[in-house]
Length: 222
Image: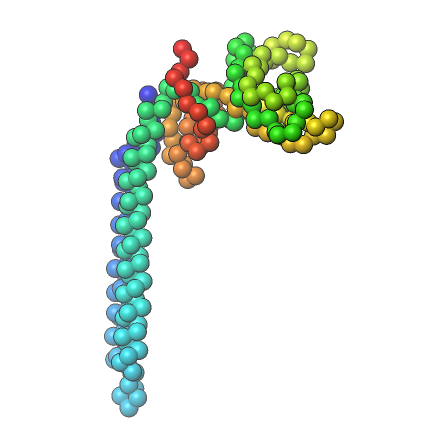
């Protein structure tokens, strides 16, 4: 199994961020001391600056410095937690995750779907769209059904070509469309990736889904 963004890479990134922040703090502190020394050197001897003002400046900078150091520490802790989560999620590679990601249809194998019918709906329609967003077919689904097997057939009754399809469920009360809900299916997890939005799974068929978007997990079916 393959896991991208290895621990060593994450560690290096975190260390680099912490080092940069620490260097920035040191540079700011030196700049502050230079400014303070300049103020003392060129102040009016007949009207010297109030010592309490220096105390306030020092206290203010000290607070900022401590906050910056705290941020560096938090970044380090978050980096470590991210690496721990990556290691834990690695165990999911090879399993099948259920989500509302587009379905990768192979052109032959029926797909098990998990439906979320709307309360109060007395009929429902499964809508299939292609990768370009065009509607391919619409087929009725029993009202209140929470599962359905999609045969991958087009409006002509023939199997659709292999590809990626998005499925949604339109819920009706009589002739009135009351809501459109997501349709979920299972797909094998090929890889765990780290992104700006957090950890994501790369699925068989090329789709991606965030870890938080997975609603169920099962052993790979063959």
